[in-house]
Amino acid sequence: PSVNQPYRTGYHFQPPKNWMNDPNGPMIYKGIYHLFYQWNPKGAVWGNIVWAHSTSTDLINWDPHPPAIFPSEPFDINGCWSGSVTILPDGKPVILYTGIDPKNQQVQNIAEPKDLSDPYLVEWKKSPLNPLMAPDAVNGINASSFRDPTTAWLGHDKKWRVIIGSKIHRRGLAITYTSKDFLKWEKSPEPLHYDDGSGMWECPDFFPVTRFGSKGVETSSFGEPNEVLKHVLKISLDDTKHDYYTVGTYDRVGDKFVPDKGFKMDGTAPRYDYGKYYASKTFYDSAKNRRVLWGWTNESSSVEDDVEKGWSGIQTIPRKIWLDRSGKQLIQWPVREVERLRTKQVNLRNKVLNSRSRLEVYGVTAAQADVEVLFKVRNLEKADVMKASWTDPQLMCSQMNVSVKSGLGPFGLMVLASKNLEEYTSVYFRIFKAHQNSNKYVVLMCSDQSRSSLEEDNDKTTYGAFVDINPHQPLSLRALIDHSVVESFGGKGRACITSRVYPKLAIGKNSHLFAFNYGSQTVDVLSLSAWSMKSAQIS
Ligand code: DQQ
Image (cartoon, rainbow, N blue to C red; front, side, top):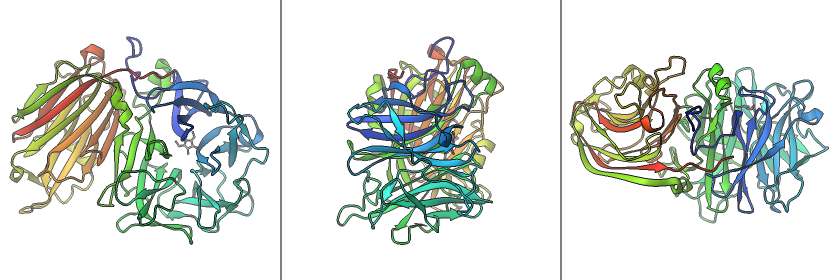
């Protein structure tokens, strides 16, 4: 970030210039992490899409390479769209990606490294057999809705499977293809899964998780002896531009994904992130035995502003992802490597936040910081009672803005705040009783951007999520603050909200950080740690 570029991030991944969208083909090969991404070499708006490429040894600092895949053949002459990497049993990584052909049809292609001894895998060659999968007169595939191949996995019969996002009318579906040799692919008669009302499924992701514990599972693994695996299907819904997931069982013989009770793979499913977060993709990190999630966050500024600043889009900090003990939801937490950027630390302990009070946290670079705070409420009896109509957390957060007092809350953090609060982004909790005379509680988490900038033209939508935690316990909140992005994690990664903001005053040294409590009851800050963050080496 500089005076002219106050919104460039210090430690989030972004290219030096131009438009970026989906993360593609993340992987680790010979100890080096690779990130490819959808990029426009010619400008700050979507178009002319290639696979740009960077590598890293820690997922935080990145070295750029030339684009790995760019339009060059009839099967991708109008664009090289999203796709994934599969590491073959001999260790060789291959890319499956969507190409746009001369008739603007979507087809699936393969590319492999030119030189496996180059640890950076800078050059990639496309197979003359491309396209490997294409819509034709008989297979009934919609040629403009057939894209984003996943990482492939090996089935019980030693055949590869891959799914491709699609739709037929309003039915969203994950079409399965199988192959013996990774080159000749056959469409399965039935999709892995579908939903009749959800519209186009973009960027599907399908992976195993261990039922108990946080370690990752390789995509083709059947699990260790006595280990119980579940499977996760994630889709990016084109209609709503959010990423939803469902936990369930993979029927290997029928090649069907069966969601667990209570899950439906549509816009009612849980989300990875309740803010701006799309087209995400995981990979199995064999070096650290974890599954890592990448996701794209677009701008909330106008196209004119994007063109003027010369860039658009960032990637969130990669997150470790695993299944909660309850089996009902996923947990996400920024990869530990980001903590190496932590420098000067400020600690507060046992501070009392009276009703309608604020506490400034001094001594950190508030525009580029990592903050972890633990709140405790004293008397849960004072919580207001939920109304029957309060089913949509985002609506609750936008209707009760931060100045509306409840029994318990709002309390949380004000980030990227100007000294006199002309501008601030507030990330906070409210606690409600589920019913009158009930000892069950609902915890609401909000990220309110409505006061984030004096500039009028930005999208300042307020976001919200319910956090599945018991407020008898301390409530934790972490925020990764980086000039124009705030990634918030409630309840140790049970709810995540990413937002983009563009303050006019709260820039650089003029940015402040507060803990606050605008509710009617006292709240304790058991502990608050804030770190100034060093900039990552990116580009
Ligand atoms: N972005 C890609 C598509 C994908 C969409 C094109 C999702 O492959 O469906 O840039 O953001």
